[in-house]
Image (cartoon, rainbow, N blue to C red; front, side):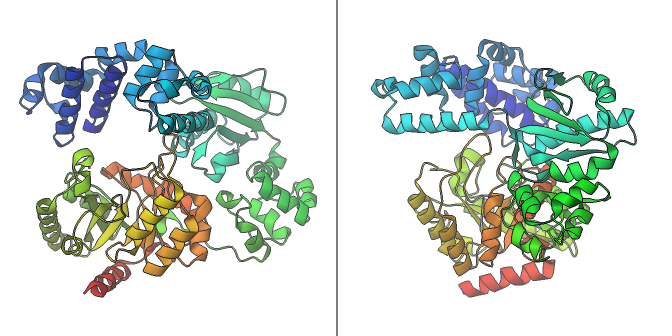
Length: 567
């Protein structure tokens, strides 16, 4: 197991201990140990208990649990707490904004064990008379409960894609020549998915016995019928699965009909002769259907009727960004803050993947408590190391960046002299999320107007299926970015995907440039660039409009020009 996974188990144990009212001293010992462990990068799996005890502040009980997790993947103590915790309560724990102590009060004093019980309690008004549950807290709980119901039955695109591909692989082992494809929101690459939908030309009678042998698939006879197999994937992730059998000669037509949103299909069918073409069932590709209807081909991701309709009618759809168009990876963390790999390791992996440049953006000093953010002395150490590495890496370039915290008043958390030492600055909010639209927008615009700000990071601060983003005035922010030449980040982490794809085309209409950034905290995080590309494509992003699809020379020129303006 990786250090990150082991620490995750310790964090989970500490939270469950707090939920169950364990000794405060013991909980704090876990929390303090976790902070120390997050700054150690030697693999814990290679340490025995005696070696772990040499780590300052690590007691025997925690060292023993780390050793146990390293060997078995879990700990008896953790499993005991998991078994004693109602499933619905564990679901509530995942939502940001529900403090563990308050959740314990709700459980112990009011018997709340799931979101339904919490909703009833919140709506009853009883909580307003309870110490620690003021009007603002109760309002926040009401919003969290509503959000929890919205998230029910959904999972991240990244996870749904893996499950969907697993099912396809199982079917392909038996039906080698079968046609099988994602359809619905999964094929359109939505950020969260409520059902894995597949289309296949495997006849249902042949399909059924094979599906029965897939271990985690559970058939729902009541919901299924002659035209679809319906069930659920049951495992660490539970999600509905729908499989549509279709005759081979109708596969392409049904692929088209089951991919587009109802709005996209409604426009296509009602405004063109599409219906006649569908009935013919004689086209080999979806492209042929669109072209024979006099339309530009709409890639699956954009079939939403958000912006593509008029451009398709005029055959003026853009050539969308592709993963292979990207030239560099910006917004990455290292062991200087809360990353898992060194600057050298991050650079070597980036170069080996064929990229031309890397941007290092560790956390700034305001994040020193929660993310080991860098004070000025360590900034200088890192920049010296990057200068040295750049002499070794030849034509590959490492840029000196920072992810600077946007403070409550919109200021960045270094002085101008320090900010001027970086090649670029990603400005992001990491605290104080409880804001109304006016406050959030003003805070962001103040940061955007700072002449040192190069990129606006994860614009709304959302964590998909865990925390709603703070409300912002997108138009005002786009106008500010256009005025001050700030690049908007598409944060490619599959749990963020922020900026939301629904706003990307509007940003592009303003002439803005976007950058697909993985927010990588380890070399494995580079793979998340793919999800950022998916989001960019949904919004109509092209390589010309994507900052990190620019050449190294263009990026260097941009950074240099911005710094010269500061002089």
